[in-house]
Image (cartoon, rainbow, N blue to C red):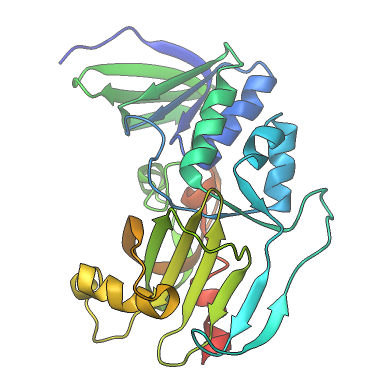
Length: 306
């Protein structure tokens, strides 16, 4: 293990997800020396977040990336409520306002979004991305932050920054080191999230199936992608419901016997929690490190399905 030459920067961003990458682009526009690091080898390659609102698109406009982002977005989709798969549509919500200049609800794919933000960073020589790097620990005083980071080879380097922003996710190590609590609640229900591509369904609105036996949410995405979210029962294990047989049974009411192209499958428990404070001296929390918000899908539609 080798100790490398120290790095000096104005802002150190921990975490190169959507929040960290967006912040880097905004700081790049202002000419602020910024180092952004992530322990991953690059931006994500699998679907995660799928919805972006009008305020966030306005932020993309401020960063000069709105046209590039919109190329991979389904704009202005609403929600159609059904009593069951293949059943009666009993309600529709289709927002039409553009208070911030863009449709209120829009579908995107996080890998494409992050790729666009990474390409946007190339415009600014003041930005330095460091993938395959992980924060080990940090200290701070009235004049700045001293962070110790490590690369994949085990080499360490000290980064001297005026400020540090933790965009390192819901389990934020930075937040934990600062001793900042998360307050709020978690939903008891679990949801199986299934992402597909090569989807041939042209319907571009969200479908919510308010079946008391198993509520389901179906979300369209750009470039023939689609997400299904199935609420799991208490006696159904994650392993059981993630099996190929269970996935086939769950998707059959919506796709019949057609083959499907699976991109991702995961079981989620959603949270509604916020950090008790978002700043400690020269260190700030942002994104999921600061707040965990339930998606527009899943638990926020449970009240319709009771």
